[in-house]
Length: 121
Ligand SMILES: [Mg+2]
Image (cartoon, rainbow, N blue to C red; front, side, top):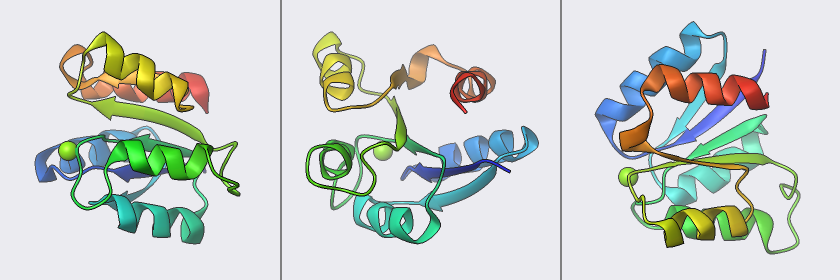
């Protein structure tokens, strides 16, 4: 079973995405802030990280930088950003920092998000 770590702080979205991903056969772990997310990454070693950007404590940009830009055992981790931030510059920043996909929340239904993930893992 493929596993996904969801780093997201909105309880409603956590509920929706967790349900959808589990229905699709994924194992799902949730962290509600960046530092917990980084800790879970080490403990759970997920196949894919679904990452929000606006988060308490350490935000998604910093999580992504920590994973991709420093010597890190998670350099090859597949990261999909799922954010309400939808400026072109933000999308470009996410991809430049090493995310393989940047999904803008307003543009994708939860089912479509799951489909995008299934294309990747
Ligand atoms: Mg958020």
